[in-house]
Amino acid sequence: MASLKDLKNRIASVKATQKITKAMKMVAAAKLRRAQDAAEAGRPYAERMGIVLGNLAAGFEGRDDAPKLMTGTGQDQIHLLLVCTAERGLCGGFNSSIARLAREYADKLLSEGKTVKIVTVGKKGHDALKRGYGQYIVENIELRGLKSIEFSDTKQIGDLVMGMFQDEKFDVCTLFYAQFQSVISQVPTAKQLIPAQFEAKDEAEDGSSEDALYEYEPGEQEILETLLPRNIAIQIFSAILENGASEQGARMAAMDSATRNAGEMIDKLTTTYNRQRQAQITTELIEIIAGAEAL
Amino acid sequence: MAEAFQFELVSPERLLLSARVTDVIVPGTEGEFGVGAGHSPFLSTMRPGVVKALSEDGSKHEYFVRGGFADVSASGMTVLAEQAIPMADLDAGYIAQQIQDASEDVADAKDEDARQAARLVLSQLSELQAALKAA
Image 1 (cartoon, one colour):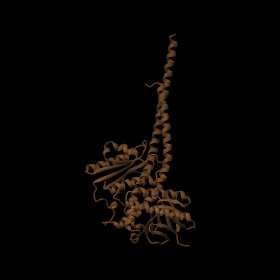
Image 2 (cartoon, rainbow over the protein chains, first blue to last red):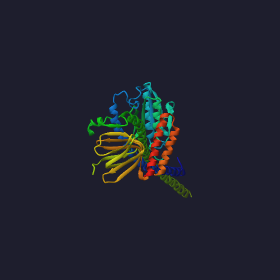
Image 3 (tube, each protein chain N blue to C red):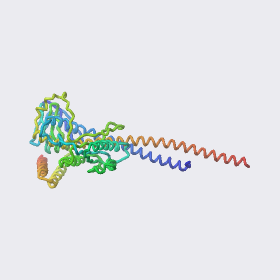
Image 4 (cartoon, each protein chain N blue to C red):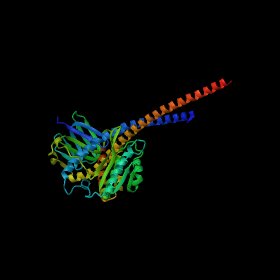
């Protein structure tokens, strides 16, 4: 059985841990607010972009001269998985759930005989996929040390993906990230980037004949060609923003439960400590009384 | 007074302006154009320049934008800028920095197409700088 001194030391160390987890929770809560604001502020742009592109793309439906980014290369042999995770750990199941989704997806593709290439964004995802999938990883991008992520920071990722597509290094690109829903729920999501997919547009909103009258400057084709690569960069950007909010949410929840857990442990240890102290006092008393009686 | 319509200016980072306006002037790739209420549906890319919007209450909004596109539809107008900064926050130093970046792009360009594109951006920026100086 542990001695009183040992118990005292353990209580002290659990208390110290609790202080750390509590501080981390506070930090995560503060960062979450900022990340959430950033994610929400980025949404209008991405949404607008989706609407405009959806309208444009509808006009190209089934045409031969539609850009490759929309129609794909006509094959789906080589798949590129773009896995976005966090730079840091200690955020519950955040990183591992994204990695698991990517792994399952990769397994499925591999069993179908497809070729898989992986680009990881964030250190943790790279660490998680290195084991077992290391030979598929073609690139690892780290966004370490950036206080707040700006569009220009993620543009390099978009450029990389575009460059690889133009060199015909893959046919289909899928983006993995965690969609932020609330502090306690982040949904790992897989989204197909290339060929681009558009949600069916809402015909009821302002009449379906409207886009037929659209005028384009310069041409329809040119606009689509500049927009599609930009759309890729935007999609990646908003995924990373969502990820940022999700990460902080997950960390906050994880640290909250760690703090609570430490509290429970302290309570239990304190009870044991008190009981043992009393037992010791009783033993000492018995010894004294026994000694006195023996006289 | 002219009829007002909904105008939104967004950059990837945030929504900069959402207001009822009567007139908007946009630097399109093929020339500056103005938009009023009831404009026919129109989509244009933009060159670096200044977006001017005159809001319903008479106040004027000016933003420096770099790249992006403008979308005019029946429900309103949206400018999606790759970068947008209020004119009040803009100074000559910022433009000078942009010009320097652009000239580095020209120097770094790998092929003729990229160099051409970078040179175009550079010339547009220089034009803008001259215009700002004159103002």
